[in-house]
Image (cartoon, rainbow, N blue to C red; front, side, top):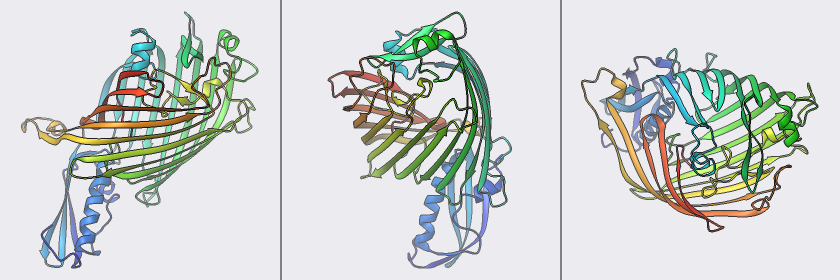
Amino acid sequence: MPELDPEKQVTIGNIYLVGNKKTKDEIIYRELGFESGQTFTAEGFQNIIELDQQKLMNTRLFIKIEIIPLFTTDHEAEVLIRVQERWYIFPTPIFRLADRNFTEWWVNQKRDFSRVNYGLQLQHMNLTGRNDKMAVRAQFGFTNQFNLQYQIPYINNAQTIGLSFSTTFSNNKTVSYGSRSHRQLFLESENELRNRYSIGSTITLRPTFYNQHHLSLIYGRNTVADTIRQLNPSYLYSQGNTQNFFAMTYAFQHDRRDFIAYPLTGRIFEFTAQQIGLGVFNEVDMFTTRMNYSSFHHLNKKLYLAQGAEVYQNFANRIPYLFRSGFGYPPDLLRGYEAYVIETDFLFSYRSALKFELIKGLKELNPGSVIDQFRSLPYAAYLKIFFDIGYAGDALRNNENNFFNNSWLGSIGIGLDIVTYYDFVMRLEYSVNREGNSGFFFNFRSAL
């Protein structure tokens, strides 16, 4: 935008879209904070452009976005929106560890390659051009799993109500049935020890750009072998070896982050309440809540601060071990304790990181590439120091030597975050926890 009086009035004329070969125009218009005929101050319009670029990037449909005002007079401007679409179809071979994280597999499970999942997953991230997502998975190995998902962001004319559907079946011949000294205990067998089936749907309401409400209803069925129930009678808390249940979940999200996969500025607030067991089968009765808030700040040209707090509470008198939560299980992370599971009915955590931008850019690759979506390579690397604290409440039944429960936990460390293609984030960290244990840890998702 040329230098203008910040208070000068600017009226929006035509809006032109370029580069969206697959994505429907309405998906882009849906994210815009302006439309033809509206009038803003020059300063206000510039702020809207910056926010709209963030919103369009967070659809995860585009690699690059430019919103360019084209002034036809001192008080009128047309707008050019130029996008470069991502590659949307991913027939991805599956080869991933079955354990909670890389440290669990490398240290506790001694790099056992039988604890690997393999197979094929087909994802389409923009099936009809309406930002609708479909995924089909066939997985074998440690966990045999078959999954089908479909999600569409809106089903009404106002583009505020979305719908998703999913169904999953899985079985295991190796199952974690408890923990001792905060290390998982596993039972292995030549026969199936557990199978799980679920089918459900979620309706989403997005009344404004930054607020979303989700309401889900799921039916689930879990079956375990006699040996699992004998080792841990509270594994299902059902009369027999099969547990049936309905679950209802409500979630609210207010998200003002600049980039979802690796935010540097903005904030996010999330609240979730879930009731497992709706009185139909009377086999499970468990109510949980989770609340978290994270904020991200740009301190100066290359320095950033990220911090977040989370609280989780399980109100059930009897918690089936199959539905356990705690530090060590996603999404509950406490750096420096990756090798442990701290299972509990209550937890609190605070995580923070001070980050320094080492490099950041967009590398233009071979301009003659047949595939447009791979002509540009975004990249960034951040050096950081971090500090985490947490508290875990009572231990679950059938767990032994729970020295981390009902006590404060903490860690400090340094690390390197690498961010590149298609939301890929890699964390390399060295940490020392409150108990004096230190180690190098390697992860594939952002801690904040």
